[in-house]
Image 1: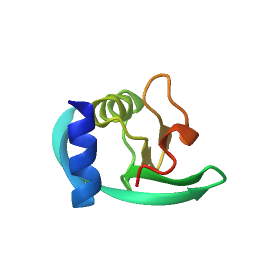
Image 2 (image 1 turned 60 degrees about the horizontal axis):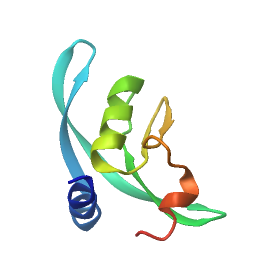
Image 3 (image 1 turned 120 degrees about the vertical axis):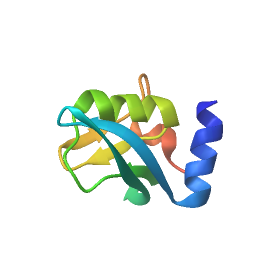
Image 4 (image 1 turned 60 degrees about the vertical axis):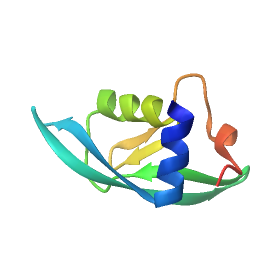
Length: 88
């Protein structure tokens, strides 16, 4: 199921998600951004706002993609940046 969501997100280039932010639910738009790394290009779901780390972790697990926001980068459990190189 996570692979289906990942493929859809990579194909569309953006995903609108319902997240809990500052105690209330909001719909936020995450864009797919490709970052160049020594391992190759890595796609991130990018949000240009602050978001709680538990929410970032939930999204990373749900979409099986790394997530980046203003307060940091989060990877799915047991994965690292080089695991996502070349899936673009």
